[in-house]
Image (cartoon, rainbow, N blue to C red):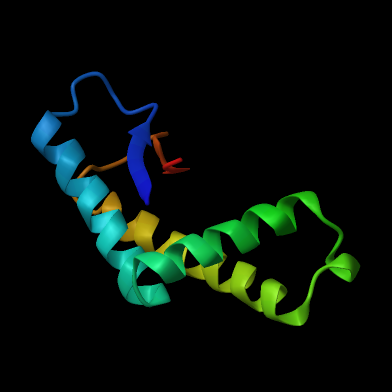
Length: 96
């Protein structure tokens, strides 16, 4: 469905710490949004919002994109909880 990876992480970040952070990010997203299918829908709505004028979007898509932003911020905080200060970020990639 989708893959989550940490990008631009420090070279000395242990693999286990990386995997745990990615799992925390995924779990928080899925809890906040209502499961894997809801994560996909919200992510797609957010992608659409990034490329489309708000006036061209439905109210439901706008609301879903806003839910993505809030859930992703919470997931980012949870994901990096044990990592410390970093410039890294989580990439969500849809599986084809």
